[in-house]
Length: 249
Length: 296
Image (spheres, rainbow over the protein chains, first blue to last red):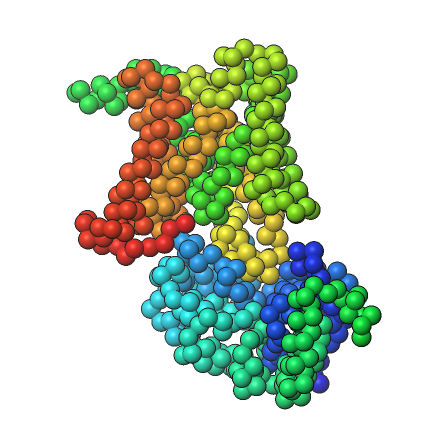
């Protein structure tokens, strides 16, 4: 395996003071393309947020191997974004230029060109001055991908990038993900559709609050592992604690 | 001639009317943009809660130094900021959400403020603190209001990008800059200082009116942050001007006249505004061509 970009050791996370992820160990290799998969409530988004730095570990640690905050680009779930906010498509994408502008700086002519190019490469040429409130869910997701393009980051973290968007957009944006992978960037995506994962993601992390498998997709997404993930998720949903699980195991 | 006599002459003739008008202009520049962000952040009731929270501080200032501008402003500022921070801390450390903890604090503050003023002052003093008196604004008060508006506009300009990012996409801001809550706290501080600026002239209960009503009305006319703020400023100033004239010509109390004028602008905007108003939604072809839009 190539050099690790992110290493998690004995990582335990709590969300809203409830435990959500238990004792995960492993690494994301440099240039890898990994899907995080698991049933609802498995802690996938929580794990992603902790890598981004939005949730502090309650136990264990995350080693970012010298990666800085601005080397990392994060796509939140659409539900976490206020799409009624009065902002244009161009201004949304230009937020991705933070590394150049910082808090106070203006957007340079070169920056504006990058915004236009990014919009063109996600199929939104001519949409720059539209308010984001007028876009469909698929178009809005394209805007957020354009912002990721502009961020030009070494590590890209996507939280359910293809949820509730049309097939055409999914296919186009999957193309963008493949391009990032081809450029040697590290990409981690929380996904639901295991068919998409098998077709496009060489690496998979399967979890149900605890790690079930992490490695080549064909070895991780086996019927046995998926059954185990569903059974574990049901076990957690019935309100059992991790300590009880430990005793039962 | 008649128009001049009604619309301009009171300001030309009387210094107190001119000072009141300048106070309204300064308040409009401070409160308009702050109100815009409160509406965009779905924190419209937060302004109301904070305006009550200022009261005990102003009352303590009154207790210590009488009707002193600086003592009451400093008291209001300290207690207002303390309540805003405490409400945030309580909601983060307990099961109570921020709106409920704020409601708790502001009700306590309001009662405490009224009690403190009543122990020492008369009902007239209480009315002054609750409803202000824009017609008695002196140069010193004017300077305070103008300074706060300037500070507020400069600070907003400095934190504009992270503030927009925090309203629109808080996860992105925290991922990229790490300090979303810092900008939230700076913004809350701006809300409090602007309410302190307003309470001398409009009182603690009405200062928030010039912050929220123009900003809510602007939502029906503009669709970008800067134009929303510009419309808010314009509506707030026009409300001040028209309210002062109403107060002068019909012998009405000035604070309520100003806020009610802002209320009229708000009602007209709901009925006939360009974006998302009743007219735009149900009679879209009438005057302007605008698609029905979501407003929040």
